[in-house]
Amino acid sequence: MVSRKALKALANTEMSLFAQDMNLTYLWVFNGEGSWLGADAEGRDDLQLLAGAAAERAVAIKKEVLRSRRPARFEIAIATQGVMRWFDIRVQPDIDDDGSVIGVVGASSEITDQKRREETLKTLLRELSHRSKNLLAIIQSLASQTARHSVSVPEFLVRFRGRIQSLSSSQDIVTDADWRGADLVSLVTMQVERYAPDGMEQIEFRGADVYLSPTASLHVGLALHELAVNAASYGSLSVPGGRVAIVADFREVDGETLLVLSWQESAGPRVRPEHDARFGTSTLERIVPNAVGGEARLEYRPEGISYTLTIPETQYEVIAPEIATSSAG
Image (tube, rainbow, N blue to C red; front, top):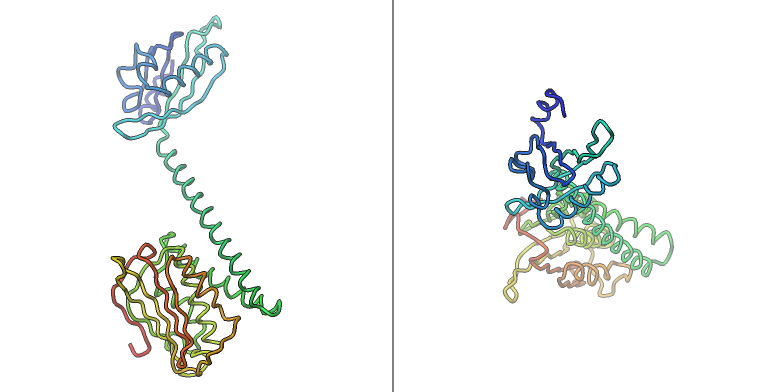
């Protein structure tokens, strides 16, 4: 039997001790209150205390311990008041002075919190795997699209590195927000400001700030990157005084509230009707809208590039319905 000091120490833990005879009837239970080994366990067996598969498994394992004289360890799950609880059970043969097996002795400790942590970790790992596969698919698509419109390896490397950097920047925002997504204002600042000679002094943002879903965050970030790179190379951000207006508004269509994100350049070089095929039109007109489940329109207006992207309400949530940031404000 366990010493008195040991029992006193165990009384302050969640561990229960027990002994069963050769018929697996409980002879005594210590510290069983609150577990599946309650005060009424003595004189009963596992088939009476447990239900279904848990009872059958416990009996089968303990019979094998009696037969083999080897210890065993197993886990059981028990539903208590609609809540699943897990217990770790260790059993070994109870051998008397003449070497005969007279039953089993064991210990039971609750591991419900540990199991919940394990399930949370598994869920997070599955989510990470899913997101990693999505990110790899985006990178593969970008690599193919970039290669298709690059005339040399150095050009491909420059354009592809820029797009990967864009993805990385958006991913940082998403990760910092615990994978909730990214707010639109942060995306605009992160993706556009670096290409404006005068920083955000040349960028005007009006309308709503929203949290975009992780998928929408990465793709809207890519769209902003493509527009900003083109504006810095050929458009309004390539000359002093050039401006970009970014507006986030809402539109009701068939009972759904769509987010309408628009980009309009002004005070830059006059835009010619013909355009460089290497400009990321595939990204802007196909990859991004397809990824977010919306629609896009890219126009080469004389006063500057215009781009509009509609995003369904499943891809965003409103943070602030109306904000404005600009050099004038």
